[in-house]
Amino acid sequence: MDWVILDGSSKDNISARRVTDLLTRNLENKKITYNYFDLEDMNILACTGCGSCGSKTPGRCGFEDEIPSIIKAIANSKGIILLTPITFGGYSSLLKKAVDKFTLIGLPLYTVKNGNLLHPMRYGYHNLIGVGVGKDTTEGQKQAFKLLIERNALNMQSPHHKAITISLNNKSAEAENEIMDLVKEVSAW
Amino acid sequence: MVAKKIILVNGSVRRNKTSYSFARTIKALSEKRDSNADIINAIDYFKGKSSLEDLEELINNCHIIGFIAPVYVDTLPYPTIWFLEELSKKYGEELKGKGTFAIGQCGFPEIRFCQSVLDACRSFAEDHNMTWLGGLGYGGGAMLDGALLEDLGKKGEKMILAFDYAIDNILKGEKIPAKSQELLTVKIPKILYWPLALYLNYKSRKISLQMGATNIEEKPYI
Ligand SMILES: Cc1cc2nc3c(=O)[nH]c(=O)nc-3n(C[C@H](O)[C@H](O)[C@H](O)COP(=O)(O)O)c2cc1C
Image (tube, rainbow over all chains, first blue to last red; front, side, top):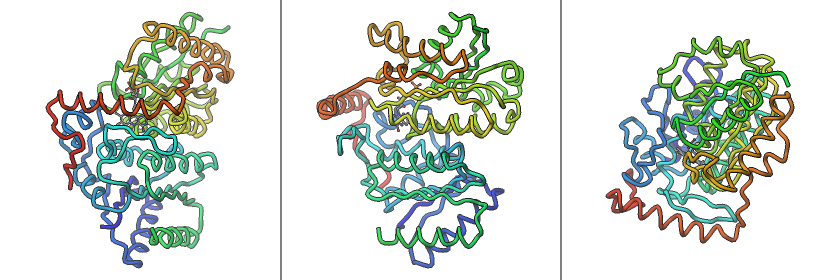
């Protein structure tokens, strides 16, 4: 699969789910393959910060949940698409329950790249896309969302990254165009 | 100065580590000024050990809410975001007009990695018409591993002073001063990053071996 989609919106968030549909439809039109994870339906336990995944059981969480299927998909993909209602300028808790476990794709080792102290990655380097959906999202919160994607991309040393914010006040044609442009751009990565 | 009531939210999933150490110092500094500070743990509400309903009185009576949280994959940990979402749903109206501030602390020695934690707390304040009193970042929180600041010698004294300046302004309803961030910023010359990385790698590999793992770079999912 080319991409892993982590959907951090709930099913009753109809507008956010419309963006999910737009995205998957556009990827399919371009024959770009993806693995879709509806996080609302998944049992992913909160990271306890125990550190086991770094030292005792490298790359594995000591608690049993459904995160291995996501990590497996990421390991075999070219990148990750994070879909979320913009929540306090960042990710919803639904999305963050999976993102906290990205420590499983990092190594507990250190490297220096372009003057940054970083963890090398366990499964190579993945592109990152953030799609934030919001109603009345302030400009400051949109910028905060973009910075968060940038920081995740730096952390993961993503070869390419991109963040877009879609306003639910937008006419549906605008949202459609934004998603089409995004898919067109990333199909070249 | 009028005595204030403060809620300090420990946003770590670990109840007694670095975020808590910072919170207890801020509590002591507030109490030195005759204000009252209660520390609550977001994780206790997430796990259902404490009930969100029981927060009503505390929230109604407080003037200021401070968030002290670690950076998890560049922003607040999942249970802390959940806690903020629940606070929004249950106490959105009650939060209006209260003061708020945040302290983010992360593993890497870079305060800029705390920015998204501060952004999240500032956005939360903005969503609820709270008064944003500012944020502070600390890089290197993992190395402290919950140590009490008074046990850290000169470094700890500087950190306590940083929080002292901050709380002094916060209790007056003023923004955290820039000198707090200056005192809290550990400046490691970038030239030392490579030797630091090599040392940390040596330590990580040693710990992993001691724990019985044979290959720290194992790829269990391919
Ligand atoms: C799951 C997880 C993710 C983390 N992500 C980051 C990160 O993105 N950047 C960083 O600098 N530190 C990161 N850290 C390190 C913590 O921010 C640091 O250890 C912090 O001091 C923990 O706070 P506590 O002792 O209050 O729990 C992470 C730690 C864990 C367990």
